[in-house]
Length: 112
Image 1 (cartoon, rainbow, N blue to C red):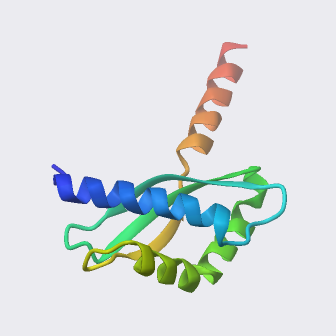
Image 2 (image 1 turned 60 degrees about the vertical axis):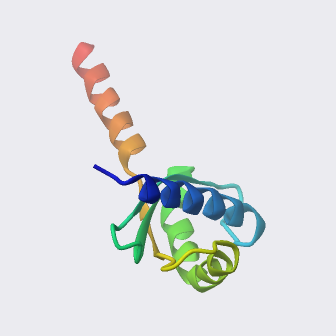
Image 3 (image 1 turned 135 degrees about the vertical axis):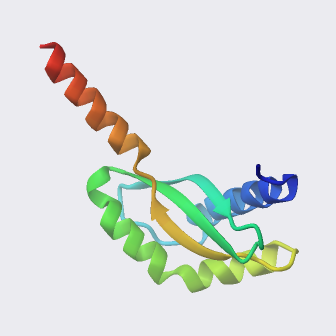
């Protein structure tokens, strides 16, 4: 079971990264990058940030840009969030939505 502190950290990191995506980071034109979830390790040293990108064809480009700008993001998080240790951020594409769409398509084909 996740501790209350980790839940709070997850929510704080999620909110702050969502804000920074809009205000500080350069994303591909005509794309939407959304923070879906954040999972922080028990020792608070690492946080996995799950993102969704629309259109899906921009996912690779968006992920490359996020990873290229991780230093800026980490610096801004360190400046805004005042707890120790501050987790090191890692971005992962959330595949839930794509998987759900694939399953729905398979089900629709089998019903035809």
